[in-house]
Length: 257
Image (tube, rainbow, N blue to C red; front, side):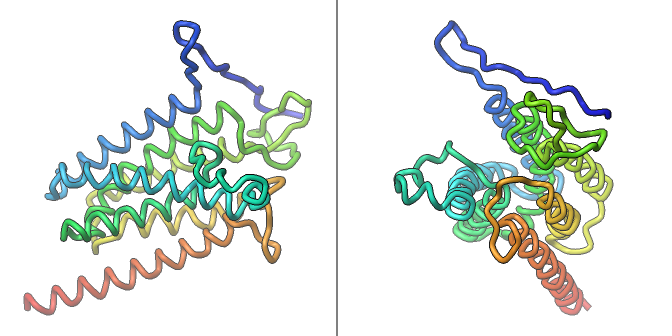
C-alpha cells in the first residue's frame, strides 16, 4: 500500500533562545508574497498601489482575528466555557474560511472609509492572496495539522502511528497551485469588476465542501462541518458578485451609449 513518507521539520532555536517554527516562517513568507503580488497587480490595473498596500494590512489583521474567533466559536465552543480568554488568544487556532470573512470585513471597512472602489481593490488583492495560499498551506503540510481519515490513497501520508491518512493541508496546497494557474491565465480577462474573486470562490468552495468529508474530529451541525456551511455561503457570494458585476457593467455601458 503506497503512501507519501511522513516528514517533520522541528522548531529551530535561534541562538538557542528564539524559537523559529516552520509553520510561522512559511506563513510569514506567504504574507510577504501576497502583499507584493497584490500591490503589483493594483499598479498594473491602474489602481493606487500604496492604498492597496495599506488596505492589505487591515485585511491581514481583521482576517487573523476573525479566523481565530470562527475557529473557537464554531469548532471548539467548549474551550470558551473552560476559559473565555481563549477568544483573545489569536494564535491558538485559525479557520481559513473565518480568515476570508475577516478579510472581507477589513476590505469593506478600509476601502469604503477611503472612498475607494472596494471590489476593484479586492480583485487585485485576490491575485496576491491565491499564490500566497500555496505557501500558507505548505506550512500546514510541514506540520501536518489537518490529518484526515484513514485511506489507501497514494497522495496520503503514513503518520507516526502507522496509519495512512489524508492530509487536508497538503491537498489544499496542491489545489491552490491549480487555482493560481487558472487565475493567472485569466489575469487579462476582466469582463466585470469582481470577476477574479468570483472565479476563485466558484472553484474553491465546492472542492473545500467535499474535502471536509475527509476530516476527522470536526464539530458538525445538522451533519455538516462549519467549513461546509461557509463553503455554501462563499459559493452564494460568488453568484452575488457575478450578478452585481454584470449589472454594473451593463449600466456603465448604457450610460456611455
